[in-house]
Image (cartoon, rainbow, N blue to C red):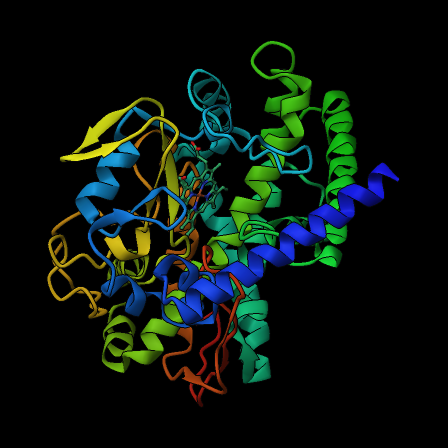
Length: 422
Ligand code: HEM
């Protein structure tokens, strides 16, 4: 009976929340509500342009589109992420534990330090040949087909292969880890329905069991991977209950973001044929710049937020303890005060400021060297091998306002797809 009561009140809350966004978005033209609806998913940049640089949200928090203010908030230690302890809204038991992404120091520092060595320059150099091999295998298959969907055939399998490898998941289990991880990742933007909530619960249970099995394996047979390092630190630098959340965070963050970076890059390049031609003329020289310009122009993570840990003044704006500031990364990356002609996609752009696609401050993305390496190799090899790449159908976007990227991007290779072994 108690379960039924909880389910009913959860369902009522869910649908009331949805109606609230529809009402405030479409009828009151509230930009934060619109960002959660179709107009925000289709073109958030048009909405950002109509917003003030800093202003209140309708639920008593703050939001900023300014590059300077986003960067300041993300770096300022008077802000944190442990909102539940300061606000009237406690965390519910069924909310996912996002490990150190969701923690302030000292827990954040302790857990992040444990994962950090997996992303060292030496480790990255070790991943390069594996990434190149995976990319070429995927392109061989795509070239044979002639026409293919870039997301499931190219952008998605690459990060899944790499992150399961980094964690130490045996090849035979990689598909199951990826399947459950994708269900969990679908909750990043909130839970959409009761059946979604049920799928999440079951994926969470299954993923937990898979990780527990992997911990057992690596206790018996340690290897040179992140899970082996985590089990070796158990009880000393990491508590047993913190191990599954950390591995789930890395799994989900590892493949739900890079896929969108590659998808958004190819989409922007196909929209701007002169930029695609420039890349094809010098793939090795320009692939890195194309990745950086995509991260600025159309970042896969569009926003994050911080909670004030004390009453404070932010450039003349008084913020009370417990209030959030939503930092609109996608808007900050198009702030004309930081980037001249911000709506132009230009892979030859002179660097005038750091984009905030990987955030800033102590939560600066730990996986960014890997994401950059994967995307750089993926774009370079695509331009080298398929210089006549064209669209073959309409793009479809994922149904999320926070994580931005295509779920379908049909392309054709054109006549001159080159083999990996020229
Ligand atoms: C294009 C790809 C990626 C993008 C755009 C991205 C974006 C971000 C952003 C914006 C944050 C900080 C959120 C905040 O400040 O609240 C973050 C943190 C994080 N990212 Fe990434 N990420 C990417 C790839 C990856 C990869 C490949 C991994 C792991 C293999 C990863 C693991 C993490 C982790 C563990 C954190 C938490 C860091 C902390 O709290 O200290 N990310 N990422």
